Length: 251
Ligand code: MG
Image 1 (cartoon, rainbow, N blue to C red):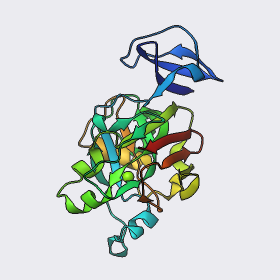
Image 2 (cartoon, rainbow, N blue to C red):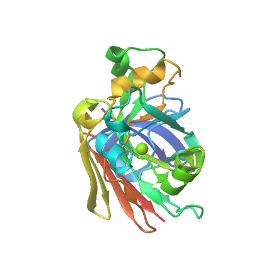
Image 3 (cartoon, helix red, strand yellow):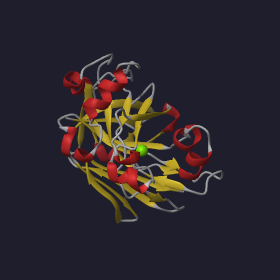
């Protein structure tokens, strides 16, 4: 099932897509609508209304190496986490401003999971049963400020630093999906989710030991190697196998 959050004639709704028609509705806190629409006629919105966006850093070995950290040759025993606030969400197709305070804006294409039911202290074996589905994320990062600021707050959680979408795919197994990031049509990142150091069940179980995840919360699972600079006018595509393509442009 493919779930979208969309805007049409002044109303924000959730819908279920079949072929090119939005046919159903789901609650998820928004107003309900029972009408049907052509997908082409509605404006797609980021498909989540999170209280927080939990992100994993350094979760693909080759990306860890390209960032100059090799864990001394050993893999970490625990995932490295950070948060983005809901302010960071951006819709599919959004045009993101290049902030004046950074001179090194980077793309990081990632698989994202959207939480379906409240999660607290779950095992790895139970974890995926609490996930509503999967979508594409672009973890926009001000790399210079990530290095110079004491915390990653500004570098990672500024407004519109988390484009998400274009929809949630519910019938998907996240363990071994192709993940690709293209900038102006050129492939910059190409990997598989099976190359994560901590897979999604491990991340969810770990986070849930100390933080309750609410329905709508989003988990970004980390980026593979090939990260790099964005420039004004760039067109970025993040594609996750079985989900689709998230398009973002840099103003
Ligand atoms: Mg990232």
